[in-house]
Length: 124
Image 1 (cartoon, rainbow, N blue to C red):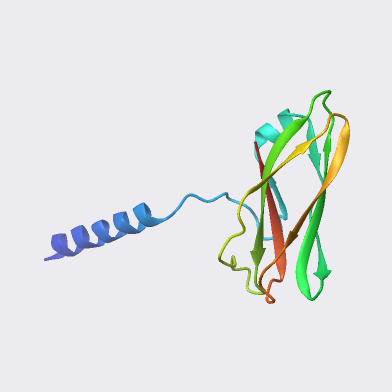
Image 2 (image 1 turned 45 degrees about the vertical axis):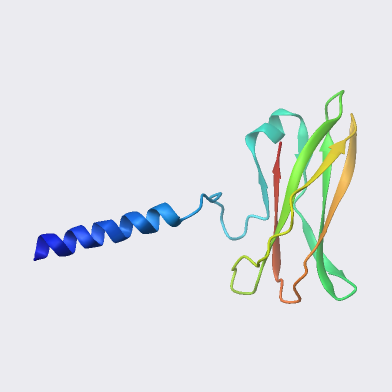
């Protein structure tokens, strides 16, 4: 009887582990997440600043390209409520090409009035 319960518990835990999606391990106060390749490509990023635009939560972040050639960066803003829970649906990923030796500003707007914080994810 006990072996049956243990086997059932292990099977349930296995299913839970299989159904979870991969996530980027970050601290709740980390507002900027960059894959290692971003730094290797000479991209410097500022943490996003949150504000409001026409009553909607919005965010912006400056990116700088230190290389002699343009670099294309992919990004996504993730929005969180007051409890720190990710708000869905997620924004679609976007891309921007940063010209050589210059900077650009990324902008994002939450489609949710309850957005309390934002995280910017950058990748190649």
